[in-house]
Image 1 (tube, rainbow, N blue to C red):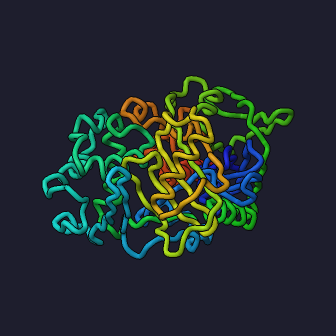
Image 2 (image 1 turned 30 degrees about the horizontal axis):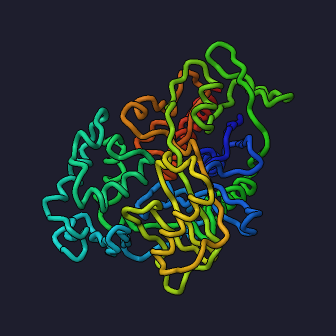
Length: 420
C-alpha cells in the first residue's frame, strides 16, 4: 500500500512528513529540480550568495508550523523577538513607532497611547472585532471604513500582506480567520518569526532528511503528465515515458498549483485569479543594531527585512510594479531601505524576484472556488494553500492542507487494511 504525493512544495512536504511519521509508504514526486515550491532558497549567481525567493513571515501562534517543524526537528530554525513588536516608518512624515500588543487575550494595549498606532482613538479598534465576524460573501470594504489612521497605518499594510490582495476587496472571512488565530489571542500568538538562515534550511532540507530517514522515496525533476482512470478511481500516473500503476489500496495526494490540478482533473473548480508578490534582495550587511523587520507606510516597499548578509524587501499585491524597468524599480526600493536604516549612497548589488502568480486572489469570489481536500475520486486527495483551508494562501495554510490530505489518505489506507 503506497501513497503517492505529487508536488514537493510545503503542502506536499507536510503531507509526506505526516504520512511517513505514521509508517506509511510514501513516494514524493516533484516536477522541478529542487523542492520547496514558492518557499525555496537558491544560490544567486548575480549576488554570489544564497537567497530566498521571497521573505515569508510566520507567527508564533501558527500551530501547523509548530507541528511541522517539530516533526522534522527544525524548531530552532525560526527566530524573532520574545514579545510581539512591530516597527513602522511612515515615509511621508518620517514618523516611527512600535506596535506592542498585550501578551494575553485581553487587549490592554489599545488603552495605551504609547502602544497603539499613532493618531488612533480607542473606538477605532472596534474594526478589529468587526473583521473577526466571518461573512463568507463579504469584502472588507463592506464591513469596515477603509480610511483613517488605523486603516492606513496598521490594517491596510497587515491585510495586504496576509491576503496578497487589495485589502478593500479582500475576503472578510479569510482576514478574520488570521486575526482570530493571532492578534485576537494576544501577543503570545502574534510574535513574528523568520526562517533562519534560509527558507530551505528551516522548512525544506530538514523535511527531506526526515523523509529519507523514514524510507520515503523522493523523486525530483519528475513531472506528472496525466492520470489514468478506471471508473471513479485513479489507476495510473503518467510521468512522461513512465507510467506508475496504482494498486487497489494505493492513494494519491495532488499538492500541485491550482492550474496544474485543473489540467489533471476533469471538472475541478479551482481559483483562477492570482496576485503577484515582488521581492528585492540587496547584498549589504545591515548596520549594527538594525531592526530585523520594519513595516513601511507610504513607501514603495511594504516590509524590509535585515538578514546577516543582506537587506530584503517584500511588496504584496504588486501588480503595479511588475512591468517597471529593473533599474528604476531597484532605485525606488533602495530609497525605502536606506531610509529605514539610515544608509547613503547608490544601491548595492541587488536582485529583483517576481512571483507573478504567487497566490490566489483572496476575494470572496475566489475563496468560493477553493475545493476541499476530499474529492469525488475516493483514492485522490488535494493539498495546497489554494484548497479550502479556511485561511489565505499562507505557509500555515499550506502545511495545514498537507496534514488534512495526509489524514484522509491514511484513513483510506487503514480502511482498506481492515477490509482486507
